[in-house]
Image (cartoon, rainbow, N blue to C red; front, side, top):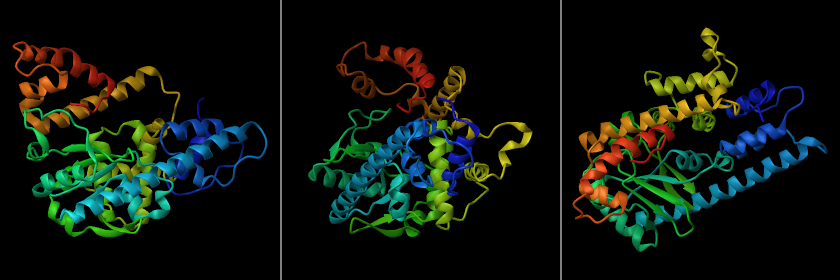
Length: 367
């Protein structure tokens, strides 16, 4: 169901923090479909001035409300898991710092009930990663990664030594919440000043537990570089990203416009608020195009392809030639074959000629 001009304008203003629907009829069915698909049901429903009475839109509006309440429940579950993990790590002498969505939600409880959280991203210092892994396992937080690094290093210590922005381990809380453990933030600029990132961190309260979160300035930088540099500004991430940027600016984040991803994010925020900066050359803005469910298959495929290229480029930058020719240990674990089989090196051909091109076309983030 395509979104009309009024519906797109309404969602843009809501994402930018300027609530209120435009005059005229609103297609609640289109808005509900879009909001659920982009995981922003809580943001859209909480900003809607009021729902329709009886009529064609009532059922769609009720579905949007249900999706918003389900999202709030998942976020609450994730925040309580964050508090439990923080207590576990602190008791083991391991400080941790929240990143990305959970950090914004922890810093602003009013925004948390509207912000969808699918997982937790936590940062620990490299020298604490083995200690953190042992503490989490002892607390019943099960690891989920089942393969070594591209160059064959095993375990969290080996993965942490690579200095990669990807998680050194992925865990699953007993309540089912995924937890990504990092030793480096997913933002190149922030990664160059790790000690400053820790020093500028703030203390927030989540479920009665003091937790560490980056300052709004650092959160803005991490969010922008993660979405643009790590994920190639995938359209599905942009609506929620604009809402996060609007919230961080409202929290006092001072934007460094010399960072390209931050500058582009602020331009998108201005577009959502009606500034029209993205309309030079007469082209529709990236945000508006991301909000159109009627994009053709060819353009959607191109977007996935560009994301896949961006992800592969990041992996090559981080892993060098091992990204092309991974270790025997990695291949054996990835394809679930015996490590000592003589034909394991032949899997390089399958990976290069089939698996990796397919992942590029699909926009996959897997190695």
